[in-house]
Length: 502
Image 1 (cartoon, rainbow, N blue to C red):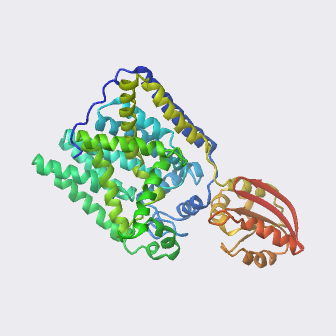
Image 2 (cartoon, one colour):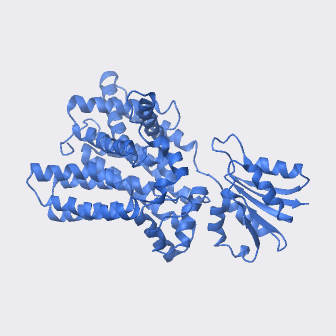
Image 3 (cartoon, one colour):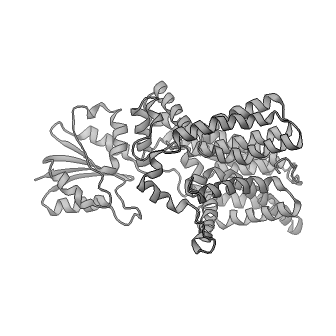
């Protein structure tokens, strides 16, 4: 029941100090996002795979299944292609759309929570928490669609709440267009439209006898089915063993008598809380405030917050149980703002209680919690994954015409992306290694077949559990077989190695 008016949190509306503090945290978060963008970290393995697909294919080619087991919404891919055609095949161009989505997420998180709670303080608190969220900021500068998923969720929530307040013809048209576009831009839009849009259609048609709203649903369905049958149903990725094994943990076990069934829910709850505050101790803080908010909602019959938390997650669970869409890790990132809304509500309920009971200053309590979030965020800031670009640029500067570059299997996609931009690699001897992940001994004869002086580009060479580094294994084997390691240039997550093969 999203249309019900929530309880207004009294006692905070005139607290200018609290509002200024929260604006300060928001400013810090946005500044950190721009600084992260300014650092323009290198693409890493997953980004390189998707980016290479985008820059090497034309618009029609992006409608076909992508190489390297990559999947992304068609609208997202076409927009990325348009941007690269207009501004060049640069990494920062490909990251512009996710970065813009992050900034718009903060805007619409504020606007939608303002409509939901009728409280500026709750909205500022929620926006401050989101602006300092390490997951959101990380994906804001990643050539992936997850930042867009989060934006689509808060955007559709805002328009759903707005149209429940006043359902003019103009708003219905805008709502229809938003829904149609979101289906092509985000894979989670169907979940959000079913949850929020489904209630809007029910409420306006059944409660208000406004049957024009049924046309909204018709347009959404007409948009969804072509997209589903053309780009989702029968997609090769649905039968790819590697991807099926990778996401198997994301599907709900259907046996309620098994331990795995209940463990699955525990892992989802952990993922959500861990997204908000990283660390097994810190993650209990959002869990406590979310529980307080849920209890308060039940006691005061504040059903809107319960609805937006439960229904999208329930729909996603059903899809997960049917093995249609996994529900774990980054695929549930879009739910994060909804849980942050409830956490913010719980925080203010708690601070109001402590103020009345013990006269504790609410500003001190909120600043303490925000300080923990700030600490959790900046432990990993700025975000670096694999600075492959630095290794590539170093090799481009140092490699001689008589030398050969051997690209380790996991570095190929990122190398392909950056080599297209670097004329230094034209007419150079380049050997792209075979992908022998988890069988590193196979690299040795492939490398030895080259002869002479070579450069090896390493990136993403560690095992899945990061207990074993194939780079070290390869170099040790080459040394043991009489070859000479001339030089090693190390960067975060990548390395350029010069080797004299005997």
